[in-house]
Image (spheres, helix red, strand yellow):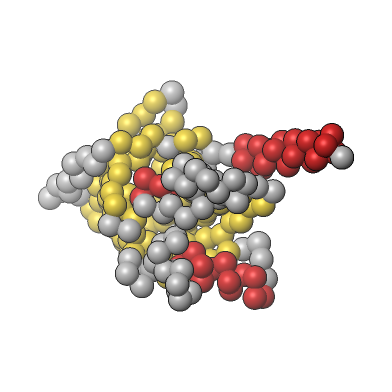
Length: 221
């Protein structure tokens, strides 16, 4: 019996590792808040198309993952000489949507993430108190053939600078910023529910601190 229990625990541990690592994006570089990029008088402003833009998210816990989308509320990108000079967008946290569940389970998860369940408001994003999150561009660099975008990301009134790889296209009428999947540590923004880092006594009832994000922003002139 003891051997069986050990084998079962080992299978669970390995499976958890596979779920955590499979198709996992690279860790975003996270640092202190930086100065926001400024818009020059000669720059042309493109308005974010909120219907065509979205953020993909993925979270995991032992033996299970969930994924979904979040919509943008508004945003703009300033372009000069066919290059992005500055930009920002606002994330509508009320639009957190799960894509892998249906019915009551889907509704329950979405409401828990939003914090609209009585007594569980502070577990995750508490959208009543913090209805939006924001991203403000602080810089763009080229490295090893990739564009690295950095910006100040604010969630629940906590701000950190993040840097992630993306594909950027600019023409006379459109701008598209599409990131590669990247990973954020949610606890840096005070999203602590189920974190084994914060709550060391929760055993295997934890939720990974790693939150995988993919950004796809489209803007029009």
